[in-house]
Image (cartoon, rainbow, N blue to C red):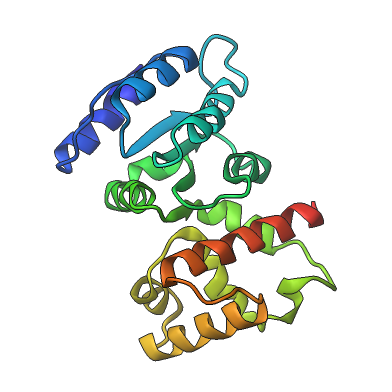
Length: 210
């Protein structure tokens, strides 16, 4: 309850409207269906069982309300949770460790990106996935720098954010993003959709390595 109240206060202080709170997975689904929020923030372990009740509720929420973004909060780094939530549709999905909530600007930014249809994967989850080696598959065609850029894309960073994180120019980021989309054979579409589709390829590849 303290974490829930604290997150609600953080979001309200950032100018966001918190339309409802829920103490268990069943109430989460009921209130989300009633209010149809832009984004729901869900703890993986919710009552009644405190196992993966929140994750299952989030997956069901995405099925019933495809336009509602979902940010999952987890105590531990479990890439399989992120993959289960994403399914075949990476738009509007966030997976963050609870420790990230303490970085308020980054947390609020991630919530905003997910509400807008983007993605936000925890850096630790992304790092663990990239750390697994594989000699074949679409990601094997990427250069080390392109893999760095793709991991930053998976975290939800914009081109400017990627440039600042990797200490390269905006033009260099754009060049790498173009190369990534070409090598992953992602068909032309709007830019944001192509980026989240690249994240889906990344996640599927990681799952095959696990």
